[in-house]
Length: 437
Image (cartoon, rainbow, N blue to C red):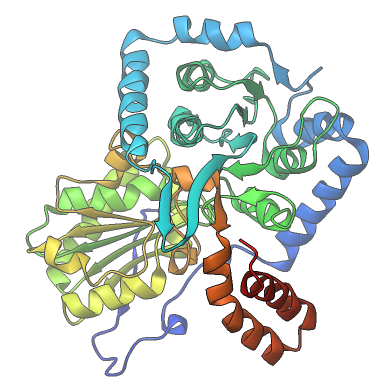
């Protein structure tokens, strides 16, 4: 059965749009949350034994141990094709170069009292790299390299083993070698998140977990967020909104809708346009691309539920739709696309013009492709160096400046009913007034 985008016509809506005007797949529900909580509890209770049993249940392979030996990681780099290795190296160089622009030197504010701010990396980071449906060496680069740039001393990767061999595929291991990953574990799913958060006999706990995954992985990260740092909010099933007009080549717009849909179920793939001709033409191109795709089942599983051709009045309403969806990827393929960027408030990443596809961002543009999904781009951002750093402020006042500000401390503390706070400032003020320095 050919994949056909569902049609949604919003031209007759003469009021501001609301979120409930727009369909959205339910990613987080009671069933998935209950299943994840059961897995987290099992790993907490039984450690490695649970990891091995859950890997057999979900990935179809029985392992003797979850750690991938370091020599296997290094050897994989020699086994992959030369052009793939070069591609990984080019991508790594660009990802590192971009993320180095996010490093900032310590700052100082001095008006008599000196306040310094500095960044300190966390000690250990766990990168979740998806597997199973496809290999994602790019995710290794997009998570491990920003952590390395941030100065993190220990970076580890969890990735599901291949169902047919029980091993982590060579291209993913090779990416771990390129990125300088310290430890690799053949474990995926919510159980990997549990191990990274709380530790097992083989896997020491981390301070921050990052990386995209299916809904169970994303829910698991939410469940452990009170005891470990979680980067990029809800990095779950992939999403794309393509805004296009008659200037966009139909094949370009169509393939870019399909690009994110081929990741599989629970994602979202939308075309938004103010032209029926574009909606019809791009939909036809999508049908043709899907029929020829070896991943047609994955694409259809997304498009059947959350694939839409949305027809709007104009570019203004198109951006209104995009802001309500708050997609992981927003692609603007229309006349004067750059002028629309300033109106975008909610998106993980914005790709401007026909020559800036999201696929470029997935691999070699430079910014991390780990982005917020499920509407969390309303309050969250792409993975950055800052996700792996803690920011300290160091406060140093001299006696005179403390005495000058003490009355304000006393007044506010008294208003809050905190007598010891007021006393702390008053004692120092009185000491200065009495001749202390």
